[in-house]
Length: 384
Image (tube, rainbow, N blue to C red; front, side, top):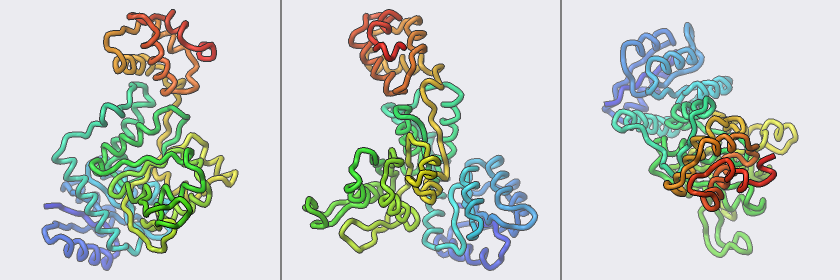
């Protein structure tokens, strides 16, 4: 039986929330707190499966309640309730680890959907061991910067928060996106990836939202877009900085309304997707140059994760090199002088470049791969 704490200083809103939740599930246990001080007192004494918390309250506000809950009951999802003027604070709350936020007056369908999802997360945490990312998509490294990313993934994955991953090409942004998916309550649902840079601008809307038969010359049949394909799961928009402004506007609308329209149709289709985006561009610079919508940035970047270049984490090269070599040929050995040589290379292509070099050394190197092999089988540009 789930136990929910409603933290709200307006008695009429508490009554509405209690009634809606009770009508949804008669077996819920519901407690109330009329301000932040009462909420913190309740959290210190009881364990809750979910906390619904207003932001603006007397004595102690919702941010202080959230901070206390994250420290003393870190596995309890906290959903913030925000007035129109509190949206910036709500985004701050998401960055602190809130599960989601709901605007006032609350949309009751959105409220119930969020509560169901949050309670599913709590149940999963209680009944299952920590989810492991499939080996194919494992992140490798022990550097301080990578440890920080591991910690961020563990905190963010159970939430519904949208994530913007930034970092240079080949640094492993897709691995971060997949780890977020596989450690979330959506892991059994689809993970759908769209490379926005690889799709012509005139086709991106059809790719994302689908199309109806006859809506353009080559539309020979109805087709679901990636938003529909990812329903219930995660949609990964890779290289979103390359998306056209027209497509950005439609993505923004889909995120705001949780609905899409196929090209050639006037019918709205509800979609339930968690969007994770990635880019190798400086989005704030793109905004300044009017190449990226600032409102879309704020919708996508509830949480931002920055993936470092390989040159900024060279202490991870020994682990990465051994990992790639073992996957190719467990019989081959990487000698210590070869590792030192690898650490001296300027890795402009990051992890992708290192993986290619290790494959080259596996094919062309001796049984024991030495510094001489590294010198012989890497390009002059790599050795410069």
